[in-house]
Image (spheres, rainbow, N blue to C red):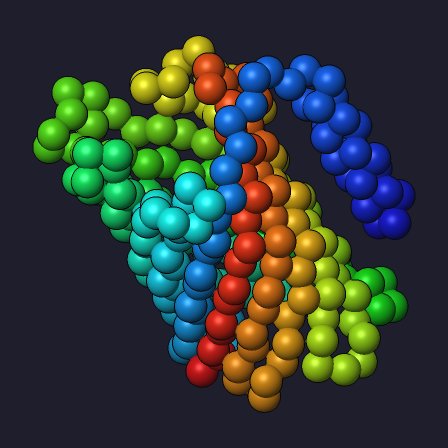
Length: 231
């Protein structure tokens, strides 16, 4: 298992520098993501999950979007769990209107701990429709695969630092078909979670999102806050 983790880390590093060498004209921006999570345990294996998130862009000055997640998470074993989640997105447009989007996500998450180091891998397949009633192609879904790798360090205290990388692969997007069947986005983040009590956690993180293999690639520099409750 340690060899697999090392291989994943090396692959991530190679991918990062490859993207840097192939960089196009970049459009940078800074923003914030603010998240509220609720995890309600229905029984020992099944949980209901709820998330609200508000995002700002253009150097924190303009509303970007807010979304709501509703889903179910099932624990197959101590190492493995699956989830199905629905997301409703309201994205603010430049003309002061909203773009309404519906997304369904299927997650498979593997977790393993090596002494004080916790490793997790999440595979997500998602489909999204946008502007169904106001666009001629709104009924056509966008399909993506997202792979996220996370390392956490157990300090034996209330603080848990972590680092993560997420790589997104585009299967099909009728609006950006030139990027079909390519890896086109990465996210790199570092953060820390603070355990307030047995049920509540507050987190801070810094995230860099980079696009490539797209017409107008953008770099985002994100400051994030997250509050989670387990019931």
